[in-house]
Length: 209
Image 1: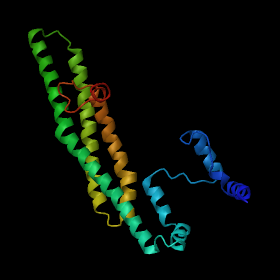
Image 2: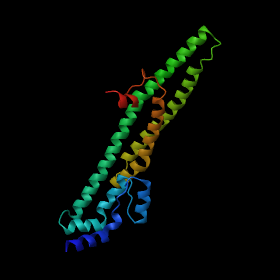
Image 3: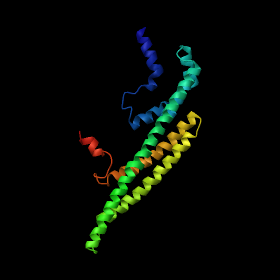
Image 4: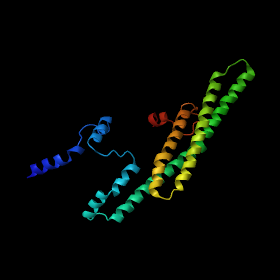
């Protein structure tokens, strides 16, 4: 009897069984062929919690009522939106209060060094100082624009009253804007002198105890 149960269960559910690397691109393609869901984000996955068939299962076994499931759904989505909002505000503060001032100070130092050299020897090209200041200024402008856009989007997100719509807006708009801020800041970290950079670098985090 046990052998039959195992065989029937495996036969009925074998499409979800995969003994390879579940993080590989091959499995993504295989899962799609098997008709399995690939929910890549919280805002994609959480709505499955209140799918009619799932509500029916929880109700059947007296685990949650439909109202309780919808309540938990709202809590999960609200928590997601609040977490993204806090992370975005923290990023904005870090950039405006630490990163941008550091970049500005280092650029000013290089510009002053170049001016001092030229005052002593006018023919000096000061290529390191000039090219670095140009690169820093370009990235500084890009970072300033990116963080301003992120700031605007966080305000818009908070104005959305529906928790599902707010979470989806955070996922589709706020997170990509945060990625843009991160990209510019990461490039600046590679250029700004350690003496001026206001936080531990990746090297510090990886190799310093």
